[in-house]
Amino acid sequence: MVFLKPPDGGWGWVIVVVSFFTQFLCYGSPLAVGVLYLEWLDAFGEGKGKTAWVGSLANGIGLLASPVCSICVSSFGARPVAIFSGFMVAGGLMMSSFAPNIYFLYLSYGIVVGLGCGLLYTATVTITCQYFDKRRGLALGLISTGSSVGLFIYAALQRELIDLYGLDGCLLIVGALSLNILACGSLMRPLESSDSPSPEKSCVDEVPDQCFVYHEKEKTVEENISILEKGCIAEKCVNNVPDFKQDNIINKNVLSSINVNEKDTYKKKVVEQTNFCKQLAKRKWQLYLNYWEETIVLFKNKVFSALFVAILLFDIGGFPPSLLMEDVARSANIDEEDYHMPLISIIGIMTAVGKLILGILADFKWINTLYLYVITLLMTGVALFAIPFAKSYLTLAMLSGILGFLTGNWSIFPYVTTKTVGIEKLTHAYGILMFFAGLGNSLGPPIVGWFYDWTQEYDTAFYFSGFCVLLGGFLLLLAALPCWNACTTQSSKLPPNTYSYKVASSA
Image 1 (tube, rainbow, N blue to C red):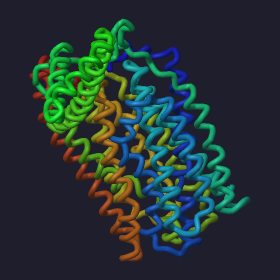
Image 2 (tube, rainbow, N blue to C red):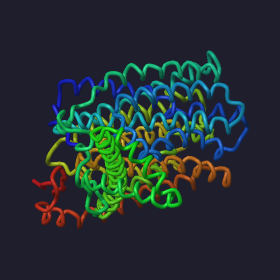
Image 3 (cartoon, one colour):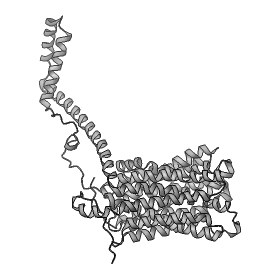
Image 4 (cartoon, helix red, strand yellow):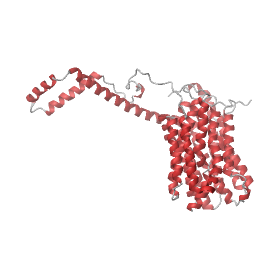
């Protein structure tokens, strides 16, 4: 589908505002699940690794289902998907207040809420990219700060609600707040496409010729009618040989009473319907084949292949701090009197700042966005290695701020993907990349929790996390360096709407 030229403003700013509040409302509780994590540890008495699955599923399952989410957004549009997903998030949060055990939370909070968040994230990113081109980095940075501001506010809000109404009351109130997503989704007006079918075309004509995958010659209506008549005569001859004379007299009387024109019209309608169903089946099969062909083409791109490895390792190592930092402080025996602000809130507000600043930087033509993304990965790995050496609230707060700011690279990740594969393939490519991101989100916190259960300390776990992030950053850097020359020499061979990177000017 070819969309009209992005307006880079107008109703696009309304899309930015409602997308901001959508991510604020849906991701506020899942990202601030570290507050609930401590309550679930005390309520159910399970191990850290087992309990961490709740938060990791909530933040990972939606990304794991990104290919499905992308198909839903492409098929139904951003507005219907956003409204439906609002019901999912609100319902899942309210169901979690009645959880009798940790396994119920896996379903209600982990899967239902997580899948709703994944659908909403794909919808907001896709419709924002459709409305913006030149200011896409700024727009994506603004909407992605919604989840970070939600993390900052919900961390304190959930703690206050737990003190006032208990864990169950907190989840009920947060679920009720999530119903405001329905109002936000209703304002996501789709950008009209320029390939609307002409009204004079019939339903059969709308099926494109290139969708025919079977190369047999299509028969005309007259040929199909002739085949039907021959089949009918042959069937009568085989079944009625013993009573040939009697049947012959009866057939003459019946045929003489039938209007020839009506019979031909009926047969033509049957043949047309048959051809339409056949062409429709061919079209669906061709779309299925095209999807996998495009997937193979995407993975032939070195930068794209390195991106999916880097995002997987980044989320395995970089996501656990936002979930476990509060428990890290408690395990380090830090006095509660030293707590001036929850560490999760620090991560949230600095993530919002990072998303906004990195999104603005991505709009400068002299900055190579992929190099910028690689730098954030390498610095995140170094910061993770420093966590075991932090033994006071001040040092943990500083590291939380640094990690939060660097985690803001989520705002430029869609920008990098769009520049790598083009806007036409964004939904497809982004769905694949988010699948691996969800896999990392789902595995990261339980792995760190299991390390603690085995060693009774977090040092080894964060050494492992830092190694994963550094490895992903170096692999992406190695894959990107030789790609610049290939892209510049073959840029003229690239299809329309596909972009290639150029080395940033050193001047």
